[in-house]
Image (tube, rainbow, N blue to C red; front, side, top):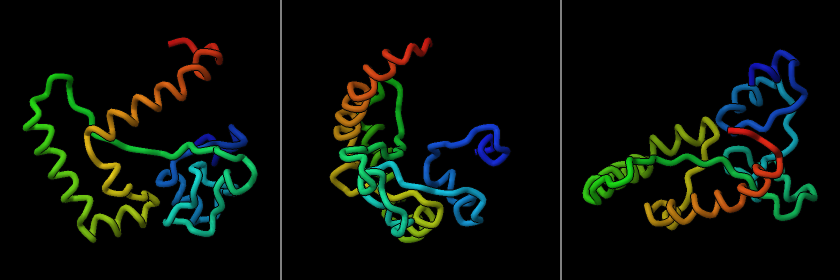
Length: 135
């Protein structure tokens, strides 16, 4: 975001929470949200999909990851504590204020996350490889 504000780059695709202060301060021009649907945090901001990039869906997401082999009881306990925190009205209000939209309960399980991450790897593997990026 600093390079965009300093005019060292012409555009950027930051996460909504990163961009919210600049959007509110009108120091950047916003064209679209990159997820398929509008954000409840910014309902007037159209999605790229709505503007003609059909099936364009690149939402920001966050997750907690633990080392492989972490006992299931620990995974479940951390998961339960995280969900309890996410369900607190004060947490939901705070996250909404900074531009983070909580996913529905059907997308909050460790099993869903494993499936989702696998799908994201498959989705981005070919474009990354064809770009020539070296790790």
